[in-house]
Image (cartoon, rainbow, N blue to C red; front, top):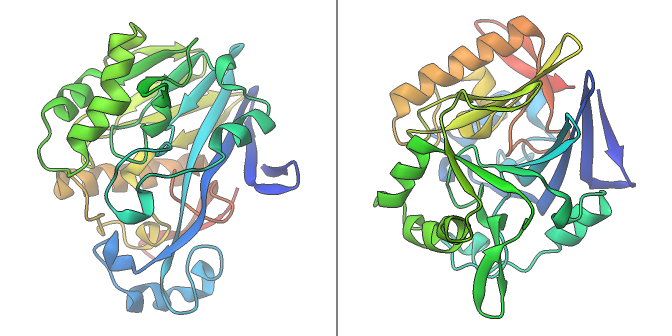
Amino acid sequence: MSEAVAGTDAFRRWTVGDIRITRILELPPMAFDPADFLQTTREEVLRRRAWLVPDYATEAGDIILHFQAFIIEAGGKRIMVDPCIGNGKPRVPAALDMLDTPFLQRLESAGFPRESIDFVLCTHLHVDHCGWNTMLVDGRWVPTFPNARYFFARGEFEHARVDGSDPNARAIFEDSVQPIVDAGLADLIEPDHPIVEGVRLEATPGHTPGHCSVVISSGGQQAILTGDVIHHPIQTSMPDVSSNFCWDGEIGRATRRAMLERVAAARAIMIPPHFAGPTGVYLTPDGEAWRVEEA
């Protein structure tokens, strides 16, 4: 079950056995025309308004998204997952360009000063999942989490290094990945690399070639930090709907459906990085697909 923290929706926590997961919002909830992100329409959203509005969609059929990171506390370690967009970075679209947010202050208020992070995991290397890897100090991009080891899936790293399909790709690699390598803090790993007991990566390709999700198991309970296998709850109802930013939509669809089936069967908590409202959800059968309920 989730709990709000410190009287603000910026923080929310879930407990899975002996492991705790905390979400930190970087930006306030944002509404978008669904077609900007997904291969669907406002009409499809409104057909499901009974369970999407108000947490996940507006009365007009726009989808609501979060941009957020997660801290896993397990085995005496603190693991940062998907450190968002970052401040002062030139990015496309304009809503993500040259941000100036209190993300680090929020992180500290939640009890996680940046020096206390032991590991950083990026499910993939898109603009909104690795930006706070670094911060600007005296005109240089330096590691934000100076005492952490940064784990990059080897296949994802190699793809991002040469990716020409994403307008942000070169800037992301130069300001959010290469400085970590230069500082000697990067580890290139395979998806089955152990993190700590109860926390492991799993290859979930499609959105990007080397995309990984984070599987958490403790005390007979399970949670999955999905990364961008899924962006919005409407995709639980329409699993074949992909995002507009997938490297391979067919692979992504197969990966998403397999994950949804597994999450539903295990009654696991699914925690996607862009789900608004309570973020963490259980899946409830709805015909041949699913809808969500707060975990």
